[in-house]
Image (cartoon, rainbow, N blue to C red):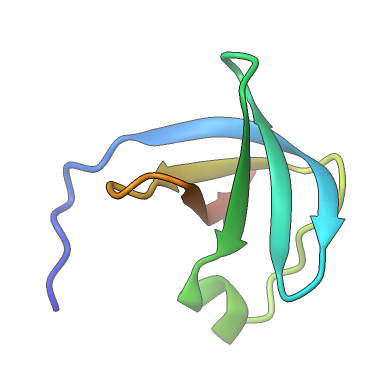
Length: 71
């Protein structure tokens, strides 16, 4: 499956670590969203800790976001 490259990335900070690689992330706009790790981050075992700044891609169907990069 080919994903379009025109997806906008949003910056945020991890505020809480939840089980199963889920995180609560506060966005720059002040909103909070539930986020999960992208497959490549799991594959390469990139650790995300509370306080890390991350780049997110919002799910087009709402509800969650995908963490694609740790800054």
